[in-house]
Image (cartoon, rainbow, N blue to C red; front, side, top):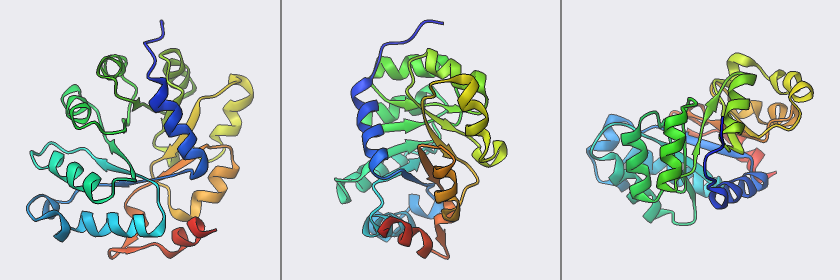
Length: 217
């Protein structure tokens, strides 16, 4: 399997940023976010709390709705220094939309060669989702230096240790899916390069204080 052309600058930039703060938070728009002015939405309130707490990397999950692009534009305008990405990219139409918006990076829950090929053509960094050693190897052969282990809670924390020795050099691995703020330290200690968290970051719209403490430390 031949490697695809490299989008190395974006990839290197994201890796460097994640080495400084190995955390991503994924926000998924609710129906109520799609019909109100952005400053009045739950998505905006959560985004403001994340930025205030010092979170550097936030992804907005892609949904098939004409207002999704507006949410991304509003979020980027409100917090221009935030490393803003797109999550849940599984089709080329979504990838095209991400590329047109100039979003810094995108994440997929799956490994799709055609989707990776199209991302390279568009000059868009698309981080693939992987779950097995074979998929990790396939992603590396496609030129991906970043992968997302998904769903991480299914394969378990020891997965990295179990594959590190037989596989040799591993790509930068982001563990995602089913994890909570309390998992951060143990999963990072287990060898994962970064952790992605989702809706568990907020409880009744309040930011998890344990995550705030981790960021502060």
